[in-house]
Length: 639
Image 1 (spheres, one colour):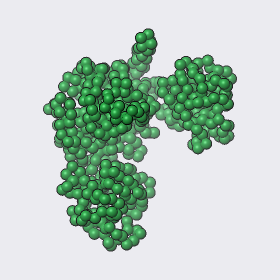
Image 2: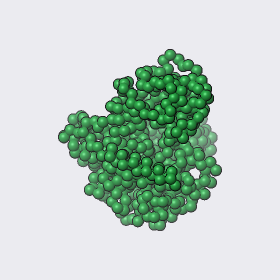
Image 3: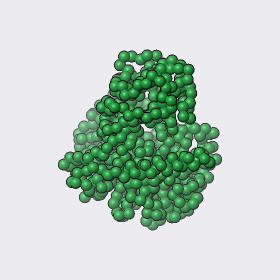
Image 4: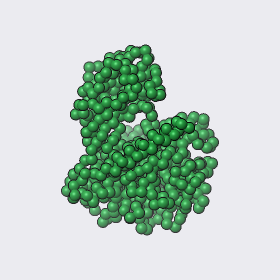
């Protein structure tokens, strides 16, 4: 009990300090004040490298002296081992080693990516038993011939060696009988004045944002509560977001979207129901909880979540309060797949949406789905993004946002709209660069905001929570507040999925090795739309019963240029190879009948041109009814 009280005291202090820190305003020119007033609050402290005190940290290490340039060139790590740190064979301050190091000298290194400018202050947190020398980008920042006698903090004087973007940290250690090493780097960055170009783009606005809290989190989502406050959560468990986190669900509360209070981890796998343990087959260490979202629905708080084992669960607060405690509501999984979200319409109907594809009405008591899930598509027969779905409403229009990787804009939030929640939706457009897997919310005073967490090398921060002030422009597009650029990145269907697809030519025997360019044996298929969906029986491809090896080809016209991205979506059972304008796109790609996709770049992207283009597919299958294929382009256009 004493330990719990001490822990609570520490947490209270941390929360108080964090709230004070995030109250700092951005130092912004008056001309940009209307923008900065609604930008995410600034947190000056950022972890550049976390120590291993709370969670394991990956490093490269060698027990034999490395090559001469090892301190400045970290690109070739083939002869290096990797391990979770701390490393050693003893314990310091109650922290246990995760990788064994028994004797002898040791050389370590790792890279880290720093964004947002060079820190004006650096703090090194370090613990070591023997001698230690730490270098950053080849410059020494710490050296000691003696043990540190526990964890200590040191402020290096030569902070000029720290760079924006990529940095290399190198460590030389002298071994003894009892060994231990761990370290972390914390940077402090002052508020940076916003210097916007005359016509700022959405990307210009986003790159000036800062995290609202100094925590590590993914899939950051927000909701309005019963008390008018805002509540947020997301995927925790840093650094093991992907496999083997403890299922903890953190919840934070704010009255103004600037100052945040930590309410605690409201649930974890320690409270996992039996059905979840059975799904894990007795090994909960390999199960991770992904993308939890908190929702206030009809007087109760629910948390919907997914796992890396591809199933979705539903929790309900037993007290009716957002801080819980929460219990498994259904005593079973709700459905399969990942990235679930809930949406309640103004008519009080509540929908489950998940991945980027599915929607189903919930029963009024939230005890189950009220219908078979339907597939969400655009008017052109395509799909919106590939994961991280959320739904919201503005007036009478419904919107869904999903994540999409769009080259220089990275893991982004794209948006499509419809007249009803089932669609069909408009072709999606890029709304928030680097803002993928997020949600949108209208504040108490009618202003729009969106969440983001950053998941690419060009995002303003990485796996930290952020809030983007939003607006609706004259064309009805959602965009970051202050965007003046009148261009939009939109998805175009080159080969539409579904009923709206074009007839394909096909054959089961080719005469030429370059059949994917030209072959007279191809014939236009009867009812030859490559499509498969909820009403597949009415428009599945007619191959006259042929199975085994099948060759398909079609031509299509392109009337635009400035293509930033091509994505290929497909669904079949078997194995296929794809070709675009004679270039191999993917060879012997396997698919089990679920919708898949990948992006096309490089020479394949450059081969696409105005005028007539050819796409070809070699398919080996015993089930030709379940075929779907579409090709989409992302194009910048004026509005």
